[in-house]
Image 1 (cartoon, rainbow, N blue to C red):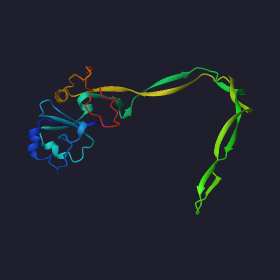
Image 2 (image 1 turned 180 degrees about the vertical axis):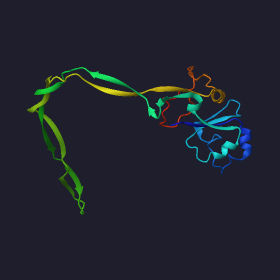
Image 3 (image 1 turned 120 degrees about the vertical axis):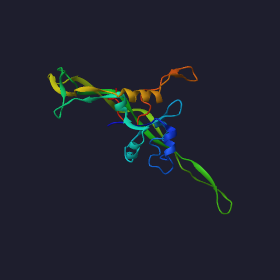
Amino acid sequence: MSILISICTDMAALLATGLVDEESPYRGKIDGRSGKHVQYSPDGTKSMIVITSIDELEGLAELPFVTVTSLEEIHGFKRQVEIEGELQWTEEVVTVPAYTPQVVVGYTDGDPIYKVERVETPTIRTVLDEDGNTLELPGRPIVEYVTTDEIEGYKQVPVYGDGEEVPESSYTVKHPVLEEVAGDPALKALYDEIYPRTPYVDEEGVEHTPPKLFAVPGGADVSHIL
């Protein structure tokens, strides 16, 4: 699926049209109201924004300074070759060598399991009755679980041995035949002008170069973009 981009080459002219006022359906699609998915040129005269739908964008075609395109059209992309309506594939035969699996053939005693006893220690609580007399009554007992030296059993540890040999086998994997579709040089030049990706140095002195794609919608696959 294409990742759509709206590019405005004249922000002043766009604002003058009134298409980006508070009531406009274009608000946020072409004027930079969508946060991190917006990029402005260094001089502030141009903008570029990722859009998620072309709905209600028909009127933009009448504006000579707005272009709706895609990251694929700008940079180029890879696609599966199609000949006479048939997608093309290559087949790879994967061979799995024979092997002998390890299986459980028995169990042996491991660490001992000690008996645990429940021990209750009585408690006494002191209360005053209606006449002010002090009374000692049984309280809630203190309950402890104590591990004794008495062995109740042993943890069972599996013992492994050779199972039946699994003979060699093979299966076929299909891979799509891909071709590269070149991007549009004019759109790429405009993209680079608005998003020059100039390296910068952070506060710790580490140099960073912005990524090739200035914004990608969450979860979008960009592996096919050149």
